[in-house]
Length: 353
Image 1 (cartoon, rainbow, N blue to C red):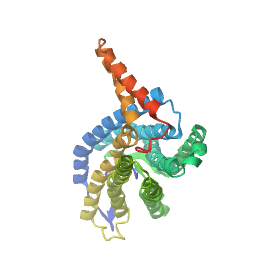
Image 2: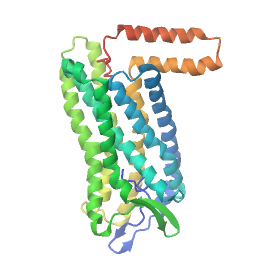
Image 3: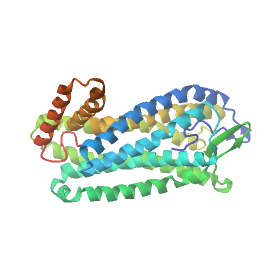
Image 4: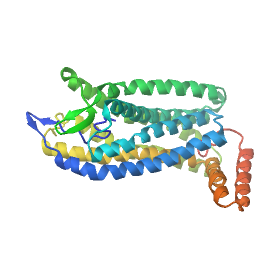
C-alpha cells in the first residue's frame, strides 16, 4: 500500500493549483475511526494466523508444499498485522516513533502485504497442479521445491517493497511529526504513478489473471469428477476464494487509482480530494481485514485443520482448566487418526488443502 500513513489519510500536502487543501476534517474522522478498526483487525487477524502457525508446526509438521505455502502466508499476514498497533497510534496522534521505526514498520508492512499476495498466488498454482496435473504434481510438489520457491518469493517481496522503504521518512510538518513518502521533486509524478500502477497490477490484476486461469482449469477437471457432492463443495470453495479476495481488495485499488490520478479523472479539487481520502480510509481498512479471512478460507475450511484446531484447544486449554475431561482429548485424537488413515494424499480435492 501507498503508506500515506500506513494508511492514506495523512498526506495533507495535496495542492489544487497553488492552494493548500485543508483536510482537518479528514484527520479528525481518521483519528476516531481508524484506531478501533485497526485494533480489531490486529486482534482477530493475529489470533487466526497464530492458530494456523501453531497447527502447521505442531500437527502438520510442514510435510507438503501446501503446508509450506500456508506457513509462509501466515507469517506474511503476521508481519503485516504487527505494524497495525503503531499505525493505530499514528492515526490518533502524530508520529512519535522516529525515522528508523518509520522505515522499519513501513518495510514490514509492505513485505507482509506483498508476501501475502504472492503466497496466495502460489497456493492457487499449487492447487491447480494438484488437481489438473496430478501425475506431474507428484514429482513437482515437493517440500524442497516449496522451500526454494518460498525463499525466492520473500526476496521478490523485499525488492518490491524497496521504493516504499527508501522514500518513506519521518519529519516535522507544521506542528506535527509525520511518517509519509517523500519522492524527489523532479521525479515526483513518475514515482507516484509507478507506485500506484505497481500496487494495482500486483494486488489486483496479477492475482485476477492467475485465479481465472488456474480455477478455470480446476473447474473443467472437477466437472469430470464422479463424486457430485465433492465437486459442488470444491466449486463453492473456489468461487468463495475468488469473490472474497476481490470484494476486499477491488474497492481499495479503484480508489487508489482515482486518488493518485485525480487530474486525469477530473477530481483535482479540494472537495473531491477530501472525499477520496475518506474513501481510502474505508477501503484500505476493508482490504486489511482480508488477512483475518485468510486462515478461514485457506486452512480451517479443511476437515483435518478443524480437527487439529479442536485438539489444539483441548490440549492447551481444556487440559489446563478441566483436568478430569480426558474423554474430549481422546475423542478428537481418534477423529484426527481416522481422517489421516482415510486420506490417500496430502491434498483433499474437496477443499484443495
